[in-house]
Length: 282
Length: 294
Image (cartoon, rainbow over all chains, first blue to last red; front, side, top):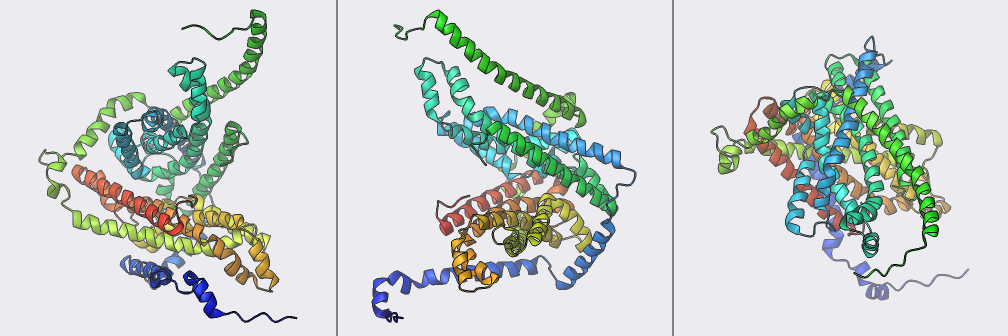
């Protein structure tokens, strides 16, 4: 077996200076970042009143709660919960649809290939961004002030907060559309309306439909929680049962949410594939 | 304009038109059925959600005037005429905002650590045993599906009011989402280095450390930063259920109709979310270059 030749360190050093003599800033960057991250973490733990005793007593409390949760049992209020679940699904469906309908015209204003002037596009985009910056729960609180407690406030909250998200996503879908098909329609003598109807819509519609379906799915989750502030649906029941410490009912409600979300996931992913077709795997 | 397009003979055209109509008719019927089904679902949903258009029209003015009111100070002037009065509580709000950021930071970090530990067991190509993979996957799914604020509600009872409940709720929810994303990165990783390390007789742990980790670390950091962004938003509402942060002040202001406070706090939250979005975007760009997947 032949011995490997001894590496000539000096020559290698001269050949690859960037590997052997990296500047101190590059060598120190990673450790400094890790130390900084840990320092903020420790500061956070101290500032947020973390203490081992609190943690241990809390975890034992949590264990106790978990014991009380088993087995899940709705008691006599199963019909009420089913109705609340239906309400939640209704809120998600209706809120998302309304948001999509409202967002469509606005998204045209925010799309670069439709509105060329920055003067309109920029404020529209910032407006949509600031709507998205506010959480659904906050919108729910605002709408409760306006239309009163109940699921209707939830519908409006989901509508407003999704309006921001849809406006952005739709405008991106429109911007991503292929220009050639529009030009083709124009070349064969189509009017501006024909260009949109036969050139743009067939490209954009499947993308938009997929996004709307995806949002209905994710809004089922959001709709479960807006009840916590009083905007109807299953969250209202959940928050109430947690406050009165009816743990068996709580675990039953959580199970209901899990099953409902899984079912909606399944249905909407099937539908999404049916609409988009096999070619686009998200 | 002179017509240069030659038109086909009528007979030929009729055949083509017929075929076209037939092809389109089936599609149209399908679309119409789907639309009808969807409309029916909407009507049922509207009945279920107690949608009352009359309420909306009666109160829609309130929604607009609500924004008018939150932009008005108590003395009737517009808020931007007197910043000192508008942001009268800025010291308290900034402190709470800092707390919100800390909650999301600590929550994301703890969640990321949990996800980091668990994801190798959840990924198809690295999991040591199928039953382990199944269990970890279900666990992550559970943590992901139950909304963070529901965890917060329960933790507030177990750990007492305060930011600790919020941190732990965010941590659990983030470990669920990040665990899934991390596992997907690992599943996309190249397995050849793993074979190389294994062929030297290394243990499972060394395989992960020296073959998988160098490939996936950048993706992990990128997703964790994205999660931090989302968690800042989530942490801003944790206070609604008493789990610390600026949400507490906001819910009090909204419920007690301190109008100008509502707009001031909302503005600080929106600005903070903007700043965090921009700065994490910048950090991601610096760390991983522009071409990193989002």
